[in-house]
Length: 469
Image (cartoon, rainbow, N blue to C red; front, top):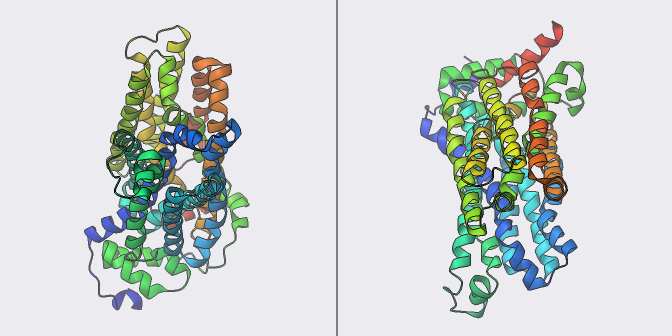
């Protein structure tokens, strides 16, 4: 056992592991909340600021521009300055955005603070799962990273509920002119500002969590890393982790160019394609345009909105399937079963629309089946896999590329879904989503290795062995 381990004093604490990972997962909660809360504010903001269609679209989509910029700089920053400090930056951005949107004096200021929120989403969407994947022990890494996706889905559902509650309780708080404006006459301010509460909690908690032990090892801070690893998983496991890391030699001067060499070509393809395909399967089309799709199936608006809440709840519940099975059954089985089920569900939904079978519960039933399949496979397992497959020295920058791929897919779906629904109809829209989803089965079968229970160093070594043979 090395000197750093001999001198460590902490003892293993499962509670410590879970609490730290839950704090990091709050980044996912804020991501989900900030993304979904906009749905309840669009008509209100449009009315208050008398927006043109172009301005309305800019209000909805401007955060995406912030996301792209956020992802672009978060990888390099997290590799250079650490994962924790970049998470703190994301929390500050979320907090600034929520308060700024709530108090905006003009539409221009509202857009500026939505862009700031987008920066926070972009940073959190990359760094939160990265931090958890490096922090959690190998045998629990899948479960811990899946907490990020669970927090994201909970954030979406709570955004729906908070929007509905605030819309139904306008005028409850009216003791001052400012409060009346926020909670009554312009309630969209309260909807957007509510995000300041979880953002503040996230920011405070981040000052209590440690840096990623693998990043510390990359910086040569072995003693600090050993203290954390012992506290996470005990001295024996910590010793194995450090020895495996040292066996790689000096990797502190890694370059993103390495990712484009033949050794890591498969990892690069997985990192770019899996996140992209997880978006073009249509998940956000169902979440964002759920009411419109259900209305086309004959649901009334109130029933459609109720169906959207049901969609959100199913998304949360079935994420637990991944949490409790991803480290037991493995990544590949969950992806194969879930993606296969998603493709079948999308094909059936398209057929129901094509044959006019829109009365009764069938459309909603198979939409929920699609959501359930996504929730225990694509949703969480995508983050697990992309957090594992990249080399230690460039994991931050590599995950930034993967996350950027996800946001490109998200953007395409968001822009094209209304056009497809209007021009092609619901049936062809869902069949196209099924077609776009299908390549993920081939990707999983041919390229993605099973990584359950393997250390990050072992996975990195796998690519080198695979290339040599």
